[in-house]
Each structure stands twice: as C-alpha cells, then as structure tokens.
Amino acid sequence: MNISTTELQKKLNNKNAILVDIRQVDAYNGWCVKNESRGGHIQGAKSLPTKWTKYMDWIEIVRSKGIFPENELVIYGYDTEESEKVAELFKRAGYNDVSIYNHFVEEWSANPDLPIDKLEKHKQLVSAKWVNTLISGSKPQLYENNKYIVVHSHYRNRDAYLSGHIPGAIDMDTLALEAPETWNRRSPDQLKNALEEHGITSDTTVVLYGKFMFPDNDDPFPGSAAGDIGAIRNAFIMMYAGVKDVRILNGGFQSWEDEGFEVSTEDVAKTSVSNFGVPIPQKPELAVDVPEAKEMLSSKEAELICVRSWPEYIGEVSGYNYIEKKGRIPGAVFGNCGSDAYHMENYRNLDHTIREFHEVQAIWEEIGITPDKHLAFYCGTGWRGSEAFFNAWLMGWPRVSVFDGGWFEWSNDPDNPFETGNPE
Image 1 (spheres, rainbow, N blue to C red):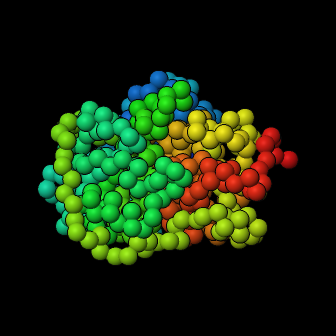
Image 2 (cartoon, one colour):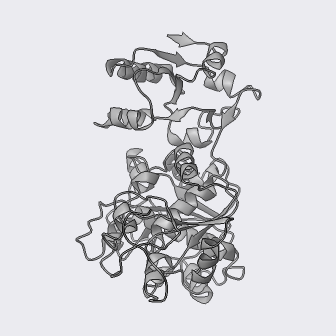
C-alpha cells in the first residue's frame, strides 16, 4: 500500500509505526544523493539499506534494530521498485502491516516545515562514489579545496596496500604517527616530519581508509589486519596535529570494492612537502594524557570511557599479546567496542560502515555518556578509543577527546589503581 505525505505525518505520531529508510547510509547521514533540497532522513527513521537484504542474516539485523512483526512499517527510499522489493521481503518474513512512501525527494525534502535529521558532520564521512568523483578530476559535493591526498592506512602491512588499493592512493603505516614504545601519538616534531614526508599540509584534504582483513588474535601482529580501525587512528592524530579537513571513506576499502570501482596495485610514490604550515598541535584538546585522565575521573563534568571488550573490562584478558596486566581503570564507564581489541562490531554495520548514529547515542545515553560532559574515550592503545571519539565528533558533541595512553600506559605504572571482576 502506498501512502501520501499527509498519511505519513499521521503515522509519525503512532508509537507502533516504524519508518525504514532503505537508501544507502550516506544518504541517511545527510548527503544529497539525488539532488534533494535537504539531505538527511525523515526524523525517527531507522537506516536499513537495500544492500543489506543480500546478507543471509538480514532479518537478524532487522530485529536487532527493534523492528518486529507486530510493528507497522513504512518503507521509503529513492526508487519505487526497490521499495516494493524490500516491502515484499518484509511480508515474506511475517511483517503483515507494510506501507510504502514514495515522495521523499519531491515532497518531504522539499518542504522545510517537515522534520529531517542528519549526522551533523556527515561531510567528513564520505562515500566511495564521492572519492571516485574526486580522483576522477571532478569536484564532489561539499569539497571546495584544490589539493587532496587519498591515504590507505595500515599497520606494518604494505602487502595490504600493494595487493589492491584505490588508484592514486599512497600508503601510510600507523607507525608514522604513533610510537611503538607507548603507542601514543608521536612528538610534534616527529608528526611534522611524518606528515611532510607523506605530502600533507594543514590545508590538504586528506581522505583516509583501511582494509579489514579478518584479524586473528593468534597472529603476532593482529592489528596488521585491522586497517579499517587504523585509518581512524591516523585521522584522529592528523586532526590533533592540525589538518583542517580530514575525511574517512565510510566502509573503507570494502565500500570501494562493493561499488565495483577500479582497484590498483601500483606502488604510488609519496611526494614530500617542505612545510606542514602551522605549529603542531593545533588541537591539543583532542588528546588527554594520564594527569588529565585522573582529573576527569574525579569530576562530575567528565567521563572516562573504556572502549574495550567485556573480557578486557573485567580482567579476564588484557586484549593484547604485549600487555601483561589485566583489568580496568576504576571509575571508567564501559563503552563496549565489541568482541576484542581488533573489532568494533558495536560501532560498525555488517558492511563496515559507521553504525547509525542514533543507535550509538542511545547506547551511550543509557550508560550516562551525554554531550554536556567532557568525554575521553580510551582502549588498550588508542585505536578503538579513536573510533569511538570519531563517532562522537561526527555527531557534533563539543568536548570529546581520546585518552591516548589508555590501558597500556595506565597499567605500566604500578602506582595506578586498577580493578578486575564484575563491577558492583
């Protein structure tokens, strides 16, 4: 059954009705994919891209979003035929009350009086099509610069780059920006040299991505297979240093492959620049070190958030083959990353795109993580903490940081307190 804009407005007041946005996540976040008047999604809609219907566990994803057969569903997207196909899939799965709304672009988006929501800093989270437009020599949406670099991030794994990357992309080892002795960001002088060697100035638009390669904790260096998280670690440090326009390819290399774009194996030479352009760091407030972390633990206006797995949090495992001590920082809030140190299932969709921001915010608010506080995210060494930070930063939360030392630095000082077991 097709419904009108007026009928949809009435359904929005029905608590049993659920609006399902089947467009790509980039459109949901705020990109104007079909030249609509306003980007974003109908307020209250859940993101469930048509692409996901091809997964065997699609219906499990549906239910994990709180969409159940007893709900009244309204499907909307850009294409009527696509909406009808998804509606039919829902009906086959036992969802009997399914309607279709076909007027998003010409009516809902075009009417400023109708509510639309979007990810505040969605322009920093770009699609594979956006990147393809950029490297093809055209000017994509929300890009006003005249110089850019696409960076394939990895940790000591150039084979991940050489086996296939976005044409023209250079590679960057995370070791260029973080020191293996502490896994903290490198010194300002070292960051300046590294960024200049990679051809990056403060006013270069840097597009980063990585390649998810199924990390295995039994490997000597599991992080070498988690380039998707490494890219966001590099992004955080670049933002801290002072790169003004840092962007992440949403979904990483997987999204590039999913679009069927050309893949290159060329070892692209780096062209250095003589001067980064500004003193480093330009954004020192983005990084928190141990003394400030301790102050935050005793403040009612701040939270230290542990973005680790539950076994790490309660001290069953350290999470890393080079960290001996197990446990957690007393007073830190559990911000559950997912299964282990090299996965971020609670912050990512099945296709590695960033999870729907409403869902992340709802989980955080349930445990007392709110935008009115100064929030510092941490993990073992900084990768997962950087990704959680990036989620909050994309939402426009005003005071968010990474506790750079994390559990590694904290646990290396025998004078620092720690806890194990289930919290009381």
